Length: 553
Image (cartoon, rainbow, N blue to C red; front, top):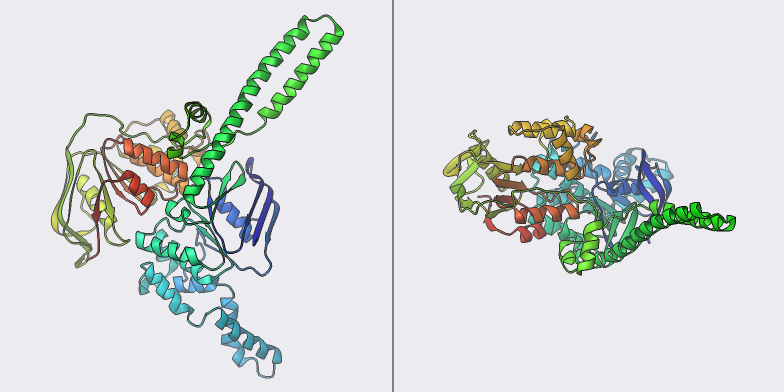
Protein backbone atom coordinates (compact mmCIF):
# COMPACT_ATOMS: atom_id res chain seq x y z
CA UNK A 1 0.00 0.00 0.00
CA UNK A 2 1.38 3.37 -1.04
CA UNK A 3 -1.44 5.71 0.10
CA UNK A 4 -3.99 5.35 2.89
CA UNK A 5 -6.71 7.97 3.38
CA UNK A 6 -8.91 8.06 6.50
CA UNK A 7 -11.23 11.08 6.71
CA UNK A 8 -13.70 11.31 9.58
CA UNK A 9 -15.36 14.41 8.14
CA UNK A 10 -14.82 17.03 5.46
CA UNK A 11 -17.31 19.87 5.13
CA UNK A 12 -17.90 23.06 3.18
CA UNK A 13 -20.07 25.20 5.42
CA UNK A 14 -23.14 23.15 6.29
CA UNK A 15 -22.51 20.72 3.40
CA UNK A 16 -20.82 17.51 4.59
CA UNK A 17 -18.73 16.21 1.70
CA UNK A 18 -17.21 13.12 3.34
CA UNK A 19 -18.24 11.16 6.44
CA UNK A 20 -16.02 8.25 7.54
CA UNK A 21 -14.38 7.98 4.12
CA UNK A 22 -11.63 5.38 3.85
CA UNK A 23 -9.58 4.25 0.86
CA UNK A 24 -6.13 3.02 -0.06
CA UNK A 25 -4.00 2.88 -3.21
CA UNK A 26 -1.59 0.03 -3.82
CA UNK A 27 1.79 0.29 -5.51
CA UNK A 28 1.82 0.07 -9.31
CA UNK A 29 -1.95 -0.08 -9.80
CA UNK A 30 -4.25 1.86 -12.12
CA UNK A 31 -7.27 3.32 -10.34
CA UNK A 32 -10.26 5.17 -11.79
CA UNK A 33 -11.92 7.63 -9.41
CA UNK A 34 -15.58 8.30 -10.29
CA UNK A 35 -18.63 9.91 -8.70
CA UNK A 36 -21.45 12.30 -9.42
CA UNK A 37 -20.47 15.90 -10.13
CA UNK A 38 -19.88 17.66 -6.82
CA UNK A 39 -19.09 14.57 -4.71
CA UNK A 40 -15.56 15.80 -3.99
CA UNK A 41 -13.21 13.92 -6.34
CA UNK A 42 -10.91 16.90 -6.99
CA UNK A 43 -11.07 17.82 -3.30
CA UNK A 44 -9.77 14.34 -2.50
CA UNK A 45 -6.76 14.93 -4.75
CA UNK A 46 -6.13 18.25 -3.02
CA UNK A 47 -6.20 16.50 0.36
CA UNK A 48 -3.71 13.84 -0.79
CA UNK A 49 -1.30 16.46 -2.18
CA UNK A 50 -1.62 18.62 0.94
CA UNK A 51 -3.27 21.60 -0.77
CA UNK A 52 -6.36 21.12 1.41
CA UNK A 53 -5.70 20.59 5.12
CA UNK A 54 -9.15 21.57 6.40
CA UNK A 55 -10.53 18.16 7.33
CA UNK A 56 -10.68 15.73 10.23
CA UNK A 57 -8.61 12.68 9.44
CA UNK A 58 -5.24 11.46 8.23
CA UNK A 59 -3.47 10.79 4.94
CA UNK A 60 -0.49 8.42 5.02
CA UNK A 61 1.89 8.22 2.04
CA UNK A 62 4.69 5.68 1.94
CA UNK A 63 7.95 7.31 2.99
CA UNK A 64 10.07 8.53 0.10
CA UNK A 65 7.27 8.35 -2.44
CA UNK A 66 7.13 11.10 -5.07
CA UNK A 67 3.63 12.45 -5.81
CA UNK A 68 2.76 14.41 -8.95
CA UNK A 69 -0.67 15.89 -9.70
CA UNK A 70 -2.21 17.68 -12.65
CA UNK A 71 -3.53 21.22 -12.11
CA UNK A 72 -6.90 22.49 -13.28
CA UNK A 73 -6.04 26.19 -12.88
CA UNK A 74 -2.84 27.94 -13.98
CA UNK A 75 -3.10 31.33 -12.27
CA UNK A 76 0.41 32.69 -11.69
CA UNK A 77 2.00 30.44 -14.30
CA UNK A 78 0.68 32.15 -17.45
CA UNK A 79 3.99 33.88 -18.21
CA UNK A 80 5.97 30.63 -18.31
CA UNK A 81 6.41 28.63 -21.47
CA UNK A 82 4.94 25.10 -21.39
CA UNK A 83 8.51 23.78 -21.39
CA UNK A 84 9.53 25.97 -18.42
CA UNK A 85 6.31 25.13 -16.58
CA UNK A 86 6.83 21.37 -16.89
CA UNK A 87 10.52 21.54 -15.92
CA UNK A 88 9.69 23.56 -12.79
CA UNK A 89 7.22 20.89 -11.62
CA UNK A 90 9.39 17.83 -12.28
CA UNK A 91 10.58 16.16 -9.06
CA UNK A 92 13.98 17.52 -7.95
CA UNK A 93 14.69 19.13 -11.34
CA UNK A 94 14.90 22.76 -10.21
CA UNK A 95 17.15 21.97 -7.24
CA UNK A 96 19.45 19.64 -9.16
CA UNK A 97 19.75 22.04 -12.11
CA UNK A 98 20.64 24.87 -9.71
CA UNK A 99 23.40 22.81 -8.11
CA UNK A 100 24.82 21.69 -11.46
CA UNK A 101 24.74 25.23 -12.94
CA UNK A 102 26.07 27.21 -9.94
CA UNK A 103 28.30 24.99 -7.80
CA UNK A 104 31.23 24.72 -10.27
CA UNK A 105 32.06 28.38 -9.59
CA UNK A 106 31.43 28.14 -5.84
CA UNK A 107 32.80 24.79 -4.66
CA UNK A 108 36.53 25.50 -4.72
CA UNK A 109 37.88 24.32 -1.36
CA UNK A 110 34.47 23.14 -0.16
CA UNK A 111 34.29 19.37 0.18
CA UNK A 112 30.59 19.61 1.04
CA UNK A 113 29.73 21.42 -2.19
CA UNK A 114 31.96 19.15 -4.25
CA UNK A 115 30.12 16.13 -2.88
CA UNK A 116 26.74 17.82 -3.43
CA UNK A 117 27.74 18.58 -7.03
CA UNK A 118 28.84 14.99 -7.63
CA UNK A 119 25.61 13.65 -6.11
CA UNK A 120 23.54 16.04 -8.24
CA UNK A 121 25.23 14.87 -11.44
CA UNK A 122 24.55 11.24 -10.52
CA UNK A 123 20.91 11.92 -9.55
CA UNK A 124 20.37 13.99 -12.73
CA UNK A 125 21.48 10.97 -14.76
CA UNK A 126 19.32 8.54 -12.76
CA UNK A 127 16.23 10.69 -13.47
CA UNK A 128 17.24 10.90 -17.14
CA UNK A 129 17.19 14.69 -17.05
CA UNK A 130 20.06 15.27 -19.50
CA UNK A 131 17.63 14.72 -22.39
CA UNK A 132 14.52 15.96 -20.62
CA UNK A 133 13.96 19.13 -22.70
CA UNK A 134 14.08 17.17 -25.95
CA UNK A 135 11.79 14.51 -24.43
CA UNK A 136 9.23 17.09 -23.34
CA UNK A 137 9.30 18.85 -26.71
CA UNK A 138 8.77 15.55 -28.54
CA UNK A 139 5.88 14.57 -26.23
CA UNK A 140 4.17 17.96 -26.59
CA UNK A 141 4.47 17.79 -30.37
CA UNK A 142 2.83 14.36 -30.26
CA UNK A 143 -0.14 16.11 -28.65
CA UNK A 144 -0.15 18.59 -31.56
CA UNK A 145 1.56 21.60 -29.99
CA UNK A 146 4.02 23.26 -32.36
CA UNK A 147 7.42 24.75 -31.45
CA UNK A 148 6.02 28.27 -31.24
CA UNK A 149 3.40 27.17 -28.71
CA UNK A 150 5.90 25.07 -26.74
CA UNK A 151 8.20 28.06 -26.32
CA UNK A 152 5.44 30.67 -26.07
CA UNK A 153 3.43 31.59 -22.98
CA UNK A 154 1.27 29.00 -21.22
CA UNK A 155 -1.46 31.63 -20.89
CA UNK A 156 -1.87 31.73 -24.69
CA UNK A 157 -2.89 28.06 -24.94
CA UNK A 158 -6.46 26.80 -25.08
CA UNK A 159 -7.97 24.84 -22.20
CA UNK A 160 -7.47 21.59 -24.09
CA UNK A 161 -3.84 22.38 -24.88
CA UNK A 162 -3.14 23.16 -21.21
CA UNK A 163 -4.48 19.71 -20.36
CA UNK A 164 -1.95 18.20 -22.76
CA UNK A 165 0.81 20.17 -21.00
CA UNK A 166 -0.37 18.74 -17.67
CA UNK A 167 -0.40 15.24 -19.10
CA UNK A 168 3.16 15.52 -20.42
CA UNK A 169 4.25 16.84 -17.01
CA UNK A 170 2.76 13.80 -15.30
CA UNK A 171 4.11 11.36 -17.87
CA UNK A 172 7.68 12.72 -17.77
CA UNK A 173 7.82 13.00 -13.97
CA UNK A 174 8.07 9.21 -13.50
CA UNK A 175 6.55 9.68 -10.05
CA UNK A 176 5.59 6.91 -7.64
CA UNK A 177 2.04 8.29 -7.50
CA UNK A 178 0.41 10.21 -10.39
CA UNK A 179 -2.91 11.97 -9.80
CA UNK A 180 -4.63 12.89 -13.07
CA UNK A 181 -7.83 14.95 -13.16
CA UNK A 182 -10.05 14.65 -16.30
CA UNK A 183 -7.17 15.07 -18.76
CA UNK A 184 -8.66 13.08 -21.67
CA UNK A 185 -11.64 15.42 -22.13
CA UNK A 186 -10.13 17.35 -25.05
CA UNK A 187 -8.11 14.55 -26.64
CA UNK A 188 -8.74 13.28 -30.14
CA UNK A 189 -8.67 9.56 -30.84
CA UNK A 190 -4.95 9.49 -31.69
CA UNK A 191 -3.94 11.39 -28.54
CA UNK A 192 -6.21 9.25 -26.38
CA UNK A 193 -4.77 6.06 -27.81
CA UNK A 194 -1.28 7.37 -26.99
CA UNK A 195 -2.43 8.18 -23.45
CA UNK A 196 -3.93 4.71 -22.99
CA UNK A 197 -0.72 3.06 -24.17
CA UNK A 198 1.23 5.08 -21.59
CA UNK A 199 -1.42 4.44 -18.94
CA UNK A 200 -1.06 0.67 -19.26
CA UNK A 201 2.73 0.69 -18.69
CA UNK A 202 3.27 3.86 -16.62
CA UNK A 203 5.72 3.71 -13.74
CA UNK A 204 4.22 3.70 -10.27
CA UNK A 205 0.57 4.10 -9.30
CA UNK A 206 -1.81 6.17 -11.41
CA UNK A 207 -5.13 7.48 -10.09
CA UNK A 208 -7.30 9.21 -12.68
CA UNK A 209 -10.51 11.15 -12.11
CA UNK A 210 -12.53 10.40 -15.22
CA UNK A 211 -15.89 9.41 -16.61
CA UNK A 212 -14.28 8.50 -19.94
CA UNK A 213 -15.42 4.91 -20.33
CA UNK A 214 -12.57 4.08 -22.71
CA UNK A 215 -10.13 4.92 -19.90
CA UNK A 216 -12.18 3.26 -17.16
CA UNK A 217 -12.16 0.01 -19.13
CA UNK A 218 -8.36 -0.12 -18.70
CA UNK A 219 -8.08 0.34 -14.91
CA UNK A 220 -7.33 -2.33 -12.30
CA UNK A 221 -9.85 -0.92 -9.87
CA UNK A 222 -12.58 1.72 -9.68
CA UNK A 223 -13.25 3.77 -6.56
CA UNK A 224 -16.61 5.53 -6.49
CA UNK A 225 -17.22 8.48 -4.17
CA UNK A 226 -20.87 8.26 -3.15
CA UNK A 227 -22.84 9.40 -0.12
CA UNK A 228 -19.67 10.74 1.50
CA UNK A 229 -17.84 7.42 1.38
CA UNK A 230 -15.56 5.46 -0.97
CA UNK A 231 -16.74 2.22 -2.58
CA UNK A 232 -14.25 -0.08 -4.30
CA UNK A 233 -14.88 -2.20 -7.42
CA UNK A 234 -12.25 -4.61 -8.74
CA UNK A 235 -11.67 -4.51 -12.49
CA UNK A 236 -12.56 -2.06 -15.26
CA UNK A 237 -15.77 -0.37 -16.39
CA UNK A 238 -17.61 -3.53 -17.51
CA UNK A 239 -16.77 -5.21 -14.20
CA UNK A 240 -17.94 -2.11 -12.34
CA UNK A 241 -21.32 -2.15 -14.08
CA UNK A 242 -21.93 -5.80 -13.17
CA UNK A 243 -20.82 -5.44 -9.55
CA UNK A 244 -22.61 -2.14 -9.10
CA UNK A 245 -25.91 -3.57 -10.39
CA UNK A 246 -25.64 -6.48 -7.95
CA UNK A 247 -24.79 -4.22 -5.00
CA UNK A 248 -27.42 -1.62 -5.77
CA UNK A 249 -30.24 -4.16 -6.13
CA UNK A 250 -29.32 -5.48 -2.68
CA UNK A 251 -29.25 -1.96 -1.25
CA UNK A 252 -32.59 -1.10 -2.89
CA UNK A 253 -34.09 -4.18 -1.24
CA UNK A 254 -32.69 -3.12 2.14
CA UNK A 255 -33.97 0.42 1.70
CA UNK A 256 -37.43 -0.79 0.64
CA UNK A 257 -37.56 -2.98 3.77
CA UNK A 258 -36.46 0.02 5.83
CA UNK A 259 -39.23 2.18 4.34
CA UNK A 260 -41.85 -0.49 5.05
CA UNK A 261 -40.56 -0.80 8.61
CA UNK A 262 -40.85 2.98 9.06
CA UNK A 263 -44.45 2.91 7.79
CA UNK A 264 -45.25 0.09 10.20
CA UNK A 265 -43.65 1.97 13.09
CA UNK A 266 -45.75 5.06 12.37
CA UNK A 267 -48.86 2.89 12.47
CA UNK A 268 -47.66 1.25 15.70
CA UNK A 269 -47.05 4.64 17.34
CA UNK A 270 -50.58 5.76 16.54
CA UNK A 271 -52.00 2.41 17.73
CA UNK A 272 -50.01 2.38 20.99
CA UNK A 273 -51.01 6.00 21.69
CA UNK A 274 -54.70 5.20 21.26
CA UNK A 275 -54.49 2.04 23.36
CA UNK A 276 -52.67 3.98 26.08
CA UNK A 277 -55.38 6.66 26.08
CA UNK A 278 -58.17 4.06 26.31
CA UNK A 279 -56.55 2.07 29.12
CA UNK A 280 -57.39 2.62 32.78
CA UNK A 281 -54.96 0.17 34.36
CA UNK A 282 -51.66 1.91 35.32
CA UNK A 283 -49.63 -1.17 34.37
CA UNK A 284 -51.27 -1.38 30.94
CA UNK A 285 -50.77 2.36 30.39
CA UNK A 286 -47.10 1.99 31.33
CA UNK A 287 -46.67 -0.95 28.93
CA UNK A 288 -48.20 0.91 25.94
CA UNK A 289 -46.23 4.04 26.81
CA UNK A 290 -43.03 1.96 26.77
CA UNK A 291 -43.95 0.35 23.44
CA UNK A 292 -44.76 3.76 21.94
CA UNK A 293 -41.45 5.19 23.16
CA UNK A 294 -39.53 2.21 21.78
CA UNK A 295 -41.23 2.56 18.39
CA UNK A 296 -40.59 6.33 18.33
CA UNK A 297 -36.89 5.80 19.09
CA UNK A 298 -36.53 3.19 16.34
CA UNK A 299 -38.38 5.44 13.87
CA UNK A 300 -36.14 8.39 14.79
CA UNK A 301 -33.05 6.22 14.22
CA UNK A 302 -34.26 5.02 10.81
CA UNK A 303 -35.40 8.52 9.79
CA UNK A 304 -31.97 9.95 10.60
CA UNK A 305 -30.27 7.67 8.06
CA UNK A 306 -29.55 9.38 4.77
CA UNK A 307 -31.12 7.88 1.70
CA UNK A 308 -28.41 6.08 -0.34
CA UNK A 309 -27.79 7.17 -3.93
CA UNK A 310 -28.99 4.40 -6.23
CA UNK A 311 -27.89 4.22 -9.87
CA UNK A 312 -27.82 1.21 -12.21
CA UNK A 313 -26.76 1.47 -15.86
CA UNK A 314 -29.52 1.12 -18.46
CA UNK A 315 -28.52 -2.35 -19.73
CA UNK A 316 -28.41 -3.82 -16.22
CA UNK A 317 -31.67 -2.06 -15.29
CA UNK A 318 -33.40 -3.69 -18.25
CA UNK A 319 -32.57 -7.12 -16.83
CA UNK A 320 -34.20 -6.50 -13.43
CA UNK A 321 -37.34 -8.42 -12.55
CA UNK A 322 -40.65 -6.56 -12.38
CA UNK A 323 -40.66 -6.14 -8.61
CA UNK A 324 -37.09 -4.83 -8.50
CA UNK A 325 -37.75 -2.54 -11.48
CA UNK A 326 -40.61 -0.93 -9.58
CA UNK A 327 -38.54 -0.58 -6.40
CA UNK A 328 -35.55 0.86 -8.29
CA UNK A 329 -37.75 3.31 -10.22
CA UNK A 330 -39.22 4.53 -6.93
CA UNK A 331 -35.94 4.96 -5.04
CA UNK A 332 -33.24 5.66 -7.67
CA UNK A 333 -31.12 8.80 -7.40
CA UNK A 334 -32.38 11.90 -9.12
CA UNK A 335 -30.83 12.44 -12.54
CA UNK A 336 -30.90 15.30 -15.02
CA UNK A 337 -34.07 15.54 -17.11
CA UNK A 338 -33.13 16.12 -20.74
CA UNK A 339 -36.29 17.18 -22.58
CA UNK A 340 -35.98 16.87 -26.36
CA UNK A 341 -38.36 16.79 -29.34
CA UNK A 342 -39.57 13.24 -28.71
CA UNK A 343 -42.57 13.29 -31.00
CA UNK A 344 -43.79 14.85 -34.22
CA UNK A 345 -44.63 13.94 -37.79
CA UNK A 346 -42.09 11.82 -39.66
CA UNK A 347 -40.16 13.81 -42.27
CA UNK A 348 -37.32 13.31 -44.70
CA UNK A 349 -36.74 17.04 -45.05
CA UNK A 350 -33.25 18.15 -46.13
CA UNK A 351 -31.90 20.48 -43.43
CA UNK A 352 -28.19 20.88 -44.22
CA UNK A 353 -26.44 20.32 -47.56
CA UNK A 354 -22.63 20.62 -47.79
CA UNK A 355 -21.05 20.03 -51.20
CA UNK A 356 -17.32 19.82 -52.09
CA UNK A 357 -16.47 22.32 -49.36
CA UNK A 358 -12.96 23.67 -48.78
CA UNK A 359 -12.51 25.85 -45.68
CA UNK A 360 -9.42 27.29 -44.04
CA UNK A 361 -7.51 30.31 -42.84
CA UNK A 362 -4.96 32.43 -44.68
CA UNK A 363 -3.96 30.92 -48.00
CA UNK A 364 -4.47 27.24 -47.21
CA UNK A 365 -7.67 25.20 -46.71
CA UNK A 366 -7.89 22.92 -43.68
CA UNK A 367 -9.63 20.22 -45.69
CA UNK A 368 -10.69 19.46 -49.28
CA UNK A 369 -14.04 18.53 -50.82
CA UNK A 370 -16.17 17.66 -47.79
CA UNK A 371 -19.69 16.66 -48.88
CA UNK A 372 -22.70 15.45 -46.88
CA UNK A 373 -26.41 15.96 -46.37
CA UNK A 374 -28.36 15.96 -43.12
CA UNK A 375 -32.06 15.18 -43.16
CA UNK A 376 -34.53 15.32 -40.29
CA UNK A 377 -34.04 12.38 -37.93
CA UNK A 378 -30.53 11.56 -39.20
CA UNK A 379 -27.31 11.41 -37.17
CA UNK A 380 -23.97 12.49 -38.59
CA UNK A 381 -20.60 12.20 -36.83
CA UNK A 382 -17.71 14.48 -37.79
CA UNK A 383 -14.55 12.52 -37.03
CA UNK A 384 -10.92 13.57 -37.25
CA UNK A 385 -7.90 14.80 -35.34
CA UNK A 386 -7.86 18.00 -33.33
CA UNK A 387 -7.11 20.89 -35.66
CA UNK A 388 -8.42 19.11 -38.76
CA UNK A 389 -11.25 21.63 -39.11
CA UNK A 390 -14.29 19.97 -37.47
CA UNK A 391 -15.16 22.96 -35.29
CA UNK A 392 -14.41 25.34 -38.18
CA UNK A 393 -16.92 23.42 -40.30
CA UNK A 394 -19.55 23.60 -37.55
CA UNK A 395 -19.05 27.36 -37.15
CA UNK A 396 -19.45 27.82 -40.91
CA UNK A 397 -22.78 25.94 -40.84
CA UNK A 398 -23.99 28.05 -37.91
CA UNK A 399 -22.91 31.26 -39.66
CA UNK A 400 -24.83 30.20 -42.78
CA UNK A 401 -27.94 29.47 -40.72
CA UNK A 402 -27.72 32.89 -39.04
CA UNK A 403 -26.92 34.59 -42.38
CA UNK A 404 -23.65 35.92 -40.95
CA UNK A 405 -20.13 35.85 -42.44
CA UNK A 406 -18.04 32.84 -41.39
CA UNK A 407 -14.72 33.32 -39.58
CA UNK A 408 -12.96 31.01 -42.08
CA UNK A 409 -12.23 31.46 -45.77
CA UNK A 410 -14.45 29.41 -48.10
CA UNK A 411 -12.16 28.46 -50.98
CA UNK A 412 -14.75 26.47 -52.90
CA UNK A 413 -17.90 24.41 -52.55
CA UNK A 414 -21.17 25.35 -50.88
CA UNK A 415 -23.18 25.21 -47.65
CA UNK A 416 -26.97 25.31 -47.78
CA UNK A 417 -29.12 25.43 -44.63
CA UNK A 418 -32.92 25.46 -44.58
CA UNK A 419 -34.26 28.94 -43.89
CA UNK A 420 -35.26 29.81 -40.31
CA UNK A 421 -34.13 26.44 -39.03
CA UNK A 422 -33.80 26.19 -35.24
CA UNK A 423 -30.35 24.91 -34.25
CA UNK A 424 -29.27 24.01 -30.72
CA UNK A 425 -25.52 24.05 -30.07
CA UNK A 426 -23.45 22.36 -27.36
CA UNK A 427 -19.97 23.86 -27.35
CA UNK A 428 -16.89 22.63 -25.46
CA UNK A 429 -16.77 25.79 -23.35
CA UNK A 430 -19.42 28.13 -21.97
CA UNK A 431 -19.64 31.40 -23.92
CA UNK A 432 -17.40 34.07 -22.37
CA UNK A 433 -20.36 36.50 -22.22
CA UNK A 434 -22.08 34.23 -19.66
CA UNK A 435 -19.16 33.73 -17.28
CA UNK A 436 -19.75 36.84 -15.16
CA UNK A 437 -23.54 36.43 -15.04
CA UNK A 438 -25.32 34.49 -12.35
CA UNK A 439 -26.69 31.13 -13.40
CA UNK A 440 -30.22 32.51 -13.38
CA UNK A 441 -29.18 35.52 -15.47
CA UNK A 442 -27.36 33.26 -17.93
CA UNK A 443 -30.46 31.11 -18.49
CA UNK A 444 -32.57 34.24 -18.94
CA UNK A 445 -30.00 35.62 -21.41
CA UNK A 446 -30.03 32.39 -23.45
CA UNK A 447 -33.82 32.44 -23.74
CA UNK A 448 -33.94 36.18 -24.51
CA UNK A 449 -31.33 35.75 -27.27
CA UNK A 450 -33.66 33.23 -28.94
CA UNK A 451 -36.76 35.39 -28.38
CA UNK A 452 -38.23 32.74 -26.10
CA UNK A 453 -40.50 33.46 -23.12
CA UNK A 454 -38.84 33.01 -19.74
CA UNK A 455 -39.82 33.77 -16.15
CA UNK A 456 -38.63 32.93 -12.63
CA UNK A 457 -40.79 29.83 -12.43
CA UNK A 458 -39.37 28.47 -15.70
CA UNK A 459 -35.80 29.21 -14.56
CA UNK A 460 -36.36 27.34 -11.29
CA UNK A 461 -37.85 24.39 -13.18
CA UNK A 462 -34.81 24.23 -15.46
CA UNK A 463 -32.46 24.45 -12.48
CA UNK A 464 -34.27 21.57 -10.82
CA UNK A 465 -34.31 19.48 -14.03
CA UNK A 466 -30.54 19.78 -14.31
CA UNK A 467 -29.72 19.04 -10.65
CA UNK A 468 -29.16 22.60 -9.50
CA UNK A 469 -30.71 23.88 -6.30
CA UNK A 470 -33.59 26.00 -7.62
CA UNK A 471 -33.53 28.22 -4.53
CA UNK A 472 -29.83 29.01 -4.13
CA UNK A 473 -27.89 28.08 -7.29
CA UNK A 474 -29.53 30.68 -9.51
CA UNK A 475 -27.48 33.34 -7.71
CA UNK A 476 -24.11 31.59 -8.27
CA UNK A 477 -21.80 33.22 -10.82
CA UNK A 478 -21.27 30.98 -13.87
CA UNK A 479 -17.47 31.34 -13.61
CA UNK A 480 -17.64 29.64 -10.20
CA UNK A 481 -19.48 26.57 -11.46
CA UNK A 482 -17.68 23.23 -11.74
CA UNK A 483 -16.98 21.66 -15.12
CA UNK A 484 -19.97 19.35 -14.69
CA UNK A 485 -22.28 22.23 -13.76
CA UNK A 486 -21.14 24.26 -16.77
CA UNK A 487 -21.83 21.22 -18.95
CA UNK A 488 -25.40 21.08 -17.61
CA UNK A 489 -25.82 24.81 -18.39
CA UNK A 490 -24.69 24.01 -21.94
CA UNK A 491 -27.46 21.42 -22.21
CA UNK A 492 -30.05 23.96 -21.04
CA UNK A 493 -28.83 26.44 -23.66
CA UNK A 494 -28.72 23.84 -26.46
CA UNK A 495 -32.28 22.59 -25.93
CA UNK A 496 -33.95 25.97 -25.44
CA UNK A 497 -36.73 26.47 -28.00
CA UNK A 498 -37.11 22.87 -29.20
CA UNK A 499 -34.43 22.99 -31.93
CA UNK A 500 -34.82 20.98 -35.13
CA UNK A 501 -31.08 20.28 -35.36
CA UNK A 502 -28.62 19.64 -32.53
CA UNK A 503 -24.90 20.25 -33.02
CA UNK A 504 -22.79 18.81 -30.22
CA UNK A 505 -19.05 19.28 -29.73
CA UNK A 506 -17.67 16.71 -27.23
CA UNK A 507 -20.87 16.64 -25.11
CA UNK A 508 -19.68 13.96 -22.66
CA UNK A 509 -16.79 16.06 -21.36
CA UNK A 510 -17.29 16.81 -17.64
CA UNK A 511 -20.61 14.96 -17.32
CA UNK A 512 -20.80 12.11 -14.80
CA UNK A 513 -21.84 8.59 -15.85
CA UNK A 514 -25.57 8.84 -15.00
CA UNK A 515 -25.81 12.21 -16.80
CA UNK A 516 -24.00 10.84 -19.87
CA UNK A 517 -26.43 7.95 -19.99
CA UNK A 518 -29.47 10.23 -19.61
CA UNK A 519 -28.14 12.42 -22.44
CA UNK A 520 -27.56 9.37 -24.66
CA UNK A 521 -31.09 8.08 -24.00
CA UNK A 522 -32.61 11.49 -24.79
CA UNK A 523 -30.60 11.84 -28.02
CA UNK A 524 -31.67 8.39 -29.20
CA UNK A 525 -35.33 9.44 -28.73
CA UNK A 526 -34.81 12.87 -30.31
CA UNK A 527 -36.75 13.23 -33.60
CA UNK A 528 -34.67 16.01 -35.07
CA UNK A 529 -31.26 15.78 -36.77
CA UNK A 530 -27.99 15.52 -34.86
CA UNK A 531 -24.49 16.50 -35.99
CA UNK A 532 -21.87 15.62 -33.39
CA UNK A 533 -18.17 15.58 -32.66
CA UNK A 534 -17.05 13.03 -30.08
CA UNK A 535 -13.98 10.97 -29.33
CA UNK A 536 -15.94 8.95 -26.75
CA UNK A 537 -16.28 5.57 -28.47
CA UNK A 538 -19.08 4.45 -26.13
CA UNK A 539 -21.08 7.59 -26.97
CA UNK A 540 -20.53 7.35 -30.73
CA UNK A 541 -21.33 3.63 -30.79
CA UNK A 542 -24.57 4.30 -28.94
CA UNK A 543 -25.65 7.26 -31.06
CA UNK A 544 -24.42 5.85 -34.38
CA UNK A 545 -25.08 7.60 -37.69
CA UNK A 546 -23.09 8.36 -40.81
CA UNK A 547 -19.40 9.15 -40.24
CA UNK A 548 -17.64 11.92 -42.16
CA UNK A 549 -13.84 11.96 -41.91
CA UNK A 550 -12.37 15.46 -41.69
CA UNK A 551 -8.62 15.50 -42.28
CA UNK A 552 -5.97 18.12 -42.90
CA UNK A 553 -4.78 18.58 -46.46
